[in-house]
Length: 418
Ligand code: NIG
Ligand code: FE
Image (cartoon, rainbow, N blue to C red; front, side, top):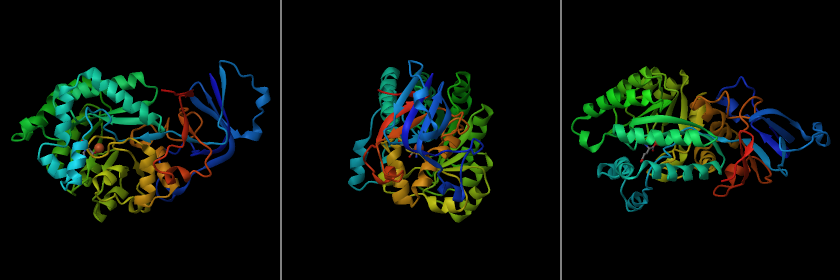
């Protein structure tokens, strides 16, 4: 099966296969090819070059050899959204109204809203129904250019609830052509009934949830919400150390509202990424600079909660690989639109279009362990790309926020229509 895409005004984000992530000044480099074609063979990128080097008349097109005319639109590798909570039951626009009326996210949580209200609604919805609404959300964001995604559990907070969420993610993995990685986030909040005995909940995660998740191979990563009033640094260390025993790769939600001194521990535990970092000290920047850990930043969460934006510029200037993700969830980022994430990266974090494109492709892929096969236009990588309308430069994408310039989505060399 071959797919030729011709008349591409710019093929964007061509990368050497040896590059697994980019950092520092290299984040501002974006290799492109003008007036190009791209060939995807059996789902993988097999060739690209200038249009003038392709003799189209010599190719015989049939059911095995297809052609898409990009009509002078640009071609990008699909976005990799490396941090989402896409599987949830109800949206929480009531809290959005509460915040307009002056309550803070923390106050809403303390009053039993927030994460725990999503836990109540997961409890009530059937697994089938949860799958159906999650599937619709996923289709919507694929049509906005996302071609690989990480999805977390964390609204179950009981063995049955967490397994139910992870089974839904697993079914999405099986039914969708894009790469989906699943993350066990049993340590998202302490459920109400364990408030007076948090140790019992942590024991439940370690002794009951983790072995069952491992048995059924339901997770790739383990995540912990390390934050004041959620999980302490010591609890995070304990949970991650145990998750690693079951083969899970660690990542953490950290420094979102408060700095509780957890970055050093997260780095020592070899977290592949530290996510959020809205509140970040010079000391922690130094620790990250000397580590292999990626900084995953979530600008739509800052936008939505009106909290500080993570210091992306400083992180890049200190050679720390930065990746951008949507954090799609009902409480702090009710949108999985990576195009808007990139716009905010430019507008509010002062990143260049080149930097946000690197952050949302190759670095996102690295943060979920798939940068050898996705995240750039590289021969041998998956043929997961999107074609834009005719645009005058790649900067137009983050500039033109709120609009969708993406015309076609190709996953594994096949055009996707929902
Ligand atoms: O990444 N901070 C923790 N978790 C989510 C929010 C979850 C929620 O409010 O439902 C986040 O922002
Ligand atoms: Fe999150």
